Image 1 (cartoon, rainbow, N blue to C red):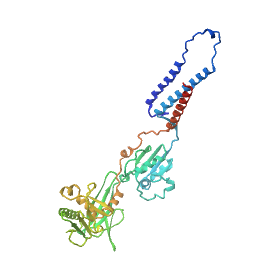
Image 2 (image 1 turned 120 degrees about the vertical axis):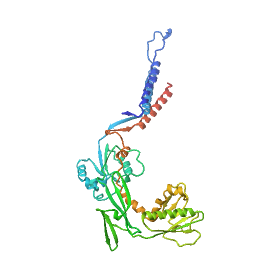
Image 3 (image 1 turned 180 degrees about the vertical axis):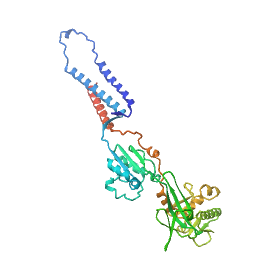
Image 4 (image 1 turned 135 degrees about the vertical axis):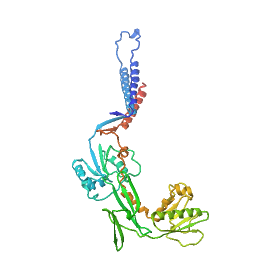
Length: 427
């Protein structure tokens, strides 16, 4: 038994009031001797006994009413013993990692209930084949919220705790969970992409990943000693260490046309300079041409529209100007089209990183970003994960049962009986 608001237990002092009233009314009255009935024996009438019985019943009803009202206000909760249980959840990426084979085998032998830390939490003995040699991505916060359905005393999670798998907001409430991180034990270098530059060199996107850091850079093939290269009838391929072969994308000139309206001359100049800077950084040849929007010119591979008015054919333009004061970025992408959300000046160009924002127009950065995201092995610190869990280290073997609804029934019931009886008996 426990109380949510024990301060209200002082309300039991209110039981003194009906008791005091009852005892006060029981005082014997003063006896007046009357001559004509002086010699009659003392007897108690039937009506007098009924009145006294009513007084006792009313007293009990009032005491019970006050008792249950105080229990209701103090937030009474009844505790009961419950069976102890535990569940062990293993991330599929840990289960498939050869470095943890011995550890997984020991868990299989000792755990009461072993499940995959994935959607639906399937039993490992029933679903091991479904997750064999696969890298399945889940939203850890969503999975943690779902563990409330277990009703177990303890839940132990073994996971690689990758930052990229924690998405959205932390759950408000969770079970008592012990979280153990089992990260990759070595730093890794990954070859993400490769293309032929305008100068005839192979340029490679390389990512460096560990449990503490992640970075990527573009290097010439000659700057990567362990890089392997092979020529095939279909083109060149490169690979890094034991990784898979990656096709080297052929270089091609990127032709860009900027169509601008009067008043957008400076915007066109800033865009032209930024596109040429992107070409220098990526080492690809970028040919930029500028035209007044009134002049009929042939559309190019990449077309940009700078005007407050819409072009006749929106689909022909990859980047269009449309002012949006609520936009988060200088250039926003929507359904395959890029939108320039502000007019360009020196401050906007440098503060909003115009050059970096234009890279996706000339280079398939979206697919590279997806590849980089899958290789990011940075680990979220356990302290940040554990902060959403119950801090109690000991598992509570009891659970509280809410009785407020039952107490309300008793309070209303006793109050109703007391009022009805008091009204009928005028007491």
